[in-house]
Image (tube, rainbow, N blue to C red):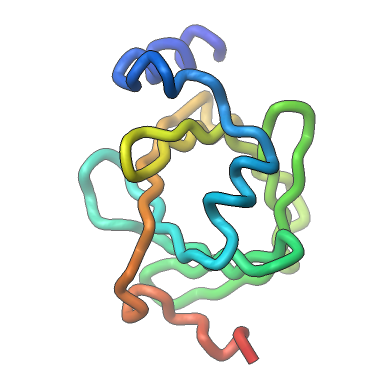
Length: 128
């Protein structure tokens, strides 16, 4: 898996090859909605990052899940109220977005970008 991770990181600038710490990720993500994409495709889902490491995930089709994130060693892991299995990532800064390496998917790389269009976030009912 490390060889795949190293291959994915070859496209990143040299200064960005260290995975973000939990504190760095929290500073970057809290208060934002991030879109998750494969390559240059449109996001297949978005996640709103709330205080206290809480999240709301939605697919573009409108399925919503609440959950939380937490550090596990050098990874950022997520659990959701409707799926208690940990989903762990390494995140790397890359210009104005992130590269996310999903560790349970044999190191698949994802583009993680800030979403300004609230129309892509269908879970506002969870915000109250």
